[in-house]
Image (cartoon, rainbow, N blue to C red; front, side, top):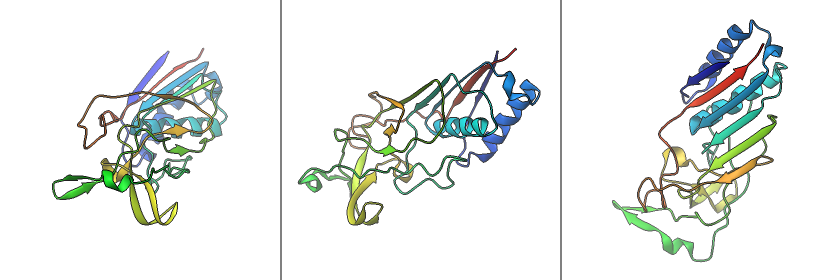
Length: 211
């Protein structure tokens, strides 16, 4: 059995290249030797998990036994650069905003913090098109917020997803996967709802077994 653990950078292309090279070396460039492949990633590492699974699938590798994601970063205006082979992880659904939500703006340091939508349906991306015997997406939505944008994927002067995290990162569901919501207690009530919703780790872990 081979275990691989690595970090994930903003541009995942080099991380993906290194992972594929390590797998090719271990299998002697014979991906059919993979007997069981289990891959799990947290935060930015979740994007790398998707990229790795898609690359192996495109190369004809056996279907993974397990794919797991935790707080996959969904970007309100699209990830740049996109996840190789997957896309920009932009939500496809508009937020459900209750009447009078603007009154929930919280002043902090001379700024107004966007209102929370932690109790509303979460953002969602379409099925990224990678197959596995079991696909699980763990997510927390306490940090999800909305803002009124002059232009957004929902249209002109529309509410759209945002947060207090870098690039407005939000977390939610993946179409076609088993989505498992979790809660967190890290962070403060203003900046992250009931929590910051994201671990500081950007880890991808994979294990493979072959004869």
